[in-house]
Amino acid sequence: MPTQYSLLTRLCHWVSAVMILALFFVGIWMVELSYYDDWYQTAPTQHKNFGIVLFIIVLIRIAARIIYPSPAPIGQKWEQVAASITHKLMYILLLSIMLSGYLISTASGKPIMWFDWLPIPATIAYADTQADLAGDFHQYAAYTLIALVIVHIAGAVKHQVIDKNSIFKRMI
Image (tube, rainbow, N blue to C red; front, side, top):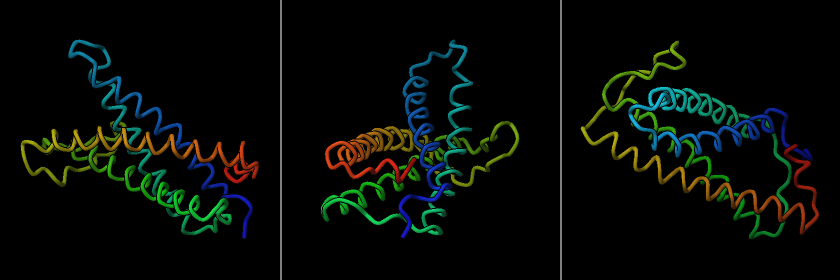
C-alpha cells in the first residue's frame, strides 16, 4: 500500500483546491457587478471557461483515484467514516455545481463557447425558469461545498497538528 497519493491525484487536488476557491470568490464578486461595469460580460465568461477546466480536472482526479491505490486511511473509525462521507459529498457537490452552471449558461438554448474555441451545446433547455432554479441551486451548493472544504481543512490540520501523523506528506 502506498504512503502517499499518486502524483496525478496530488496535482489535481491542489489545482482544484485553488480553482474552487477562486471560482467561489469570483462568483460572489461577479453577481454584484452592475450592467455598466467593465467586467459584467467578461467575469461570467471566464467563470464558465475555468469552471469547465475544473470539470475536466475533477474527472481526471476521479479516474486517478480509481486507477491508483490510495494510502491506508488514518485516524479512528469515526474519523475515517466522516472523511469518506465528506470526500464523497465534495465530489457530488462539485459535479452538481458544474451541472447547474451548465444549466444556467445554456438555459437560453445557446451553446457555451469554451475559450471562444469549442462550443459546448445546449442539450437541456426546458423552461423559462431554468436559469433561476439552477442559479439558486448553484449558489447554495457552492456555499455548502465551501463549508465542507472548511471541514476538510480542519480535519487535515487536526491530523497534522494534534495527532501528529504527518498527513500532509500524503498529499504534498
